Image (tube, rainbow, N blue to C red; front, side, top):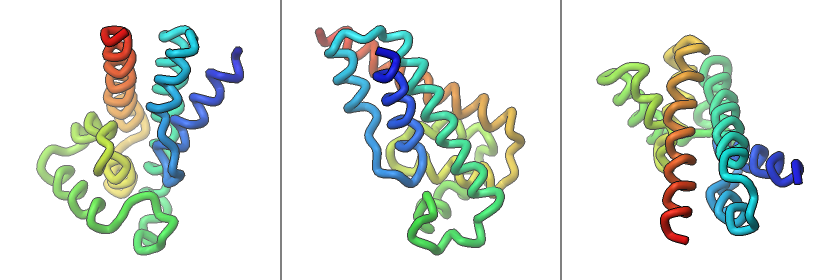
Length: 142
């Protein structure tokens, strides 16, 4: 049983990085299977937040490789995210849950040298709310 939660953690972690994972599908399937919503929320939120930390680190340490295929954000997304950062500052990290541009925001957080505590706090809030809304939406639909 614990392996199901670890699987969701890993999928959510991967979904926040350059890996092509979709944790939402797994989360819904695990809700359908009767797993406990709180533990699913915790596994998905923490995995996705820590995965975003990889992007933050890559932005801080490897941004000179932004033109490479393996880099977790496209140049166009990085430019858009940098524009948001220029306008709204670190608060844009609350939007890191967005399916388009969210990963780029976490990379730009690293490029802009957002301190780790601020980064992880803001990203965790955004991503945790997203998974909570997914679970609440599922529960309302069934």
